[in-house]
Amino acid sequence: GPAPPSPTGRRGGELTIWDDFPKGIKFEPGYMSFAGSGHDSRTTEIFIVNPGVSEAQLRMFGENSWETPFATVLDVDNSALRKIYSGYGDMPHFGGRGPDSARIYEEHGYTYLSKEFPKLDYIDRCYVVDEVGLSDLSAGDL
Image (spheres, one colour):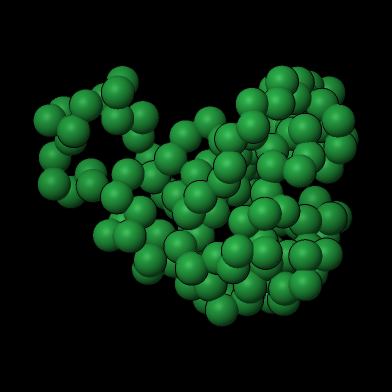
């Protein structure tokens, strides 16, 4: 989702992340990728492939040069992803009733999201396990 206003956290920002070279990695539930809107358009937004996604949707992931998995959620079937509200479905241009990414930027992001999508869940924090190590986290952090 959108980051607080910054050069890389808003649409039209000056800084973007270049696309990765195609790696031929097939998306699976739990895979994480940068979101984008065109060639070399990635900023700070990511998406996570939710458990239960249709095969048709899985086949669509990775068709664009900016969609390359860079991480995965461990033990996806027993992860917090199962608890994230998914009743809105995908974004409208993918046939769902979820948030419209253009409106997030046009209508002050979190104001639009909280008003139009009150059941939406937010990720407060996450950790790179190889850098933090599970033993370094207290039970309250997980």
